[in-house]
Every structure is written in structure tokens, then in C-alpha cells.
Image (cartoon, rainbow, N blue to C red; front, top):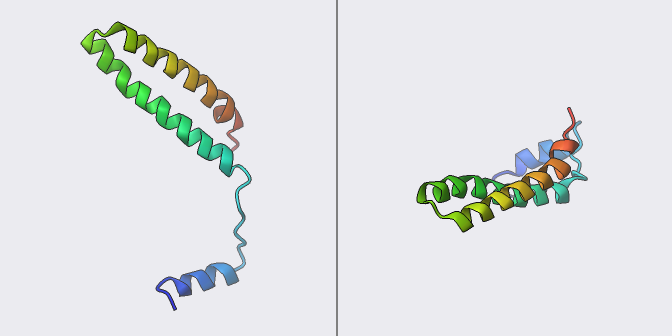
Length: 80
């Protein structure tokens, strides 16, 4: 018998039924794209301060592309 066995028994036997989310794959994709988006947001000011032109524009392109992907696959799909 494991440490969380009483908790598991209450969850399984309770009135609330747990369901697998149908959007799990889309959410994982959005997390992956979001990590890239956040990284570009952090790297972009660094390249601006260092005055390194080519990587700065590459970071801007990555930021724009990932923003568009997140707009389509995450922001437009948000439900209340």
C-alpha cells in the first residue's frame, strides 16, 4: 500500500469523475512554442544592448513567427 493510496481511493470512488483532456497535444505544442517565444523575448534585449545586428533580427523574426503561431493555436482557442 502506497503513501497516496487513501487519496487515490477517494478520487476514484468520489462523485467527481476525472477525464483526460482532449486538448493535451495542442497544449503541449503551445508550451513548446511558448518556451521558444519567451527565450526570444529574453535574448532580444541582450542583442540590442550588445548592438549585434544579425542575431537581433533573427530573434525578432523568431518572436514574430512564434507570436503568430501562439495567436492561432492558443489565444484564439481560449474559452471562458
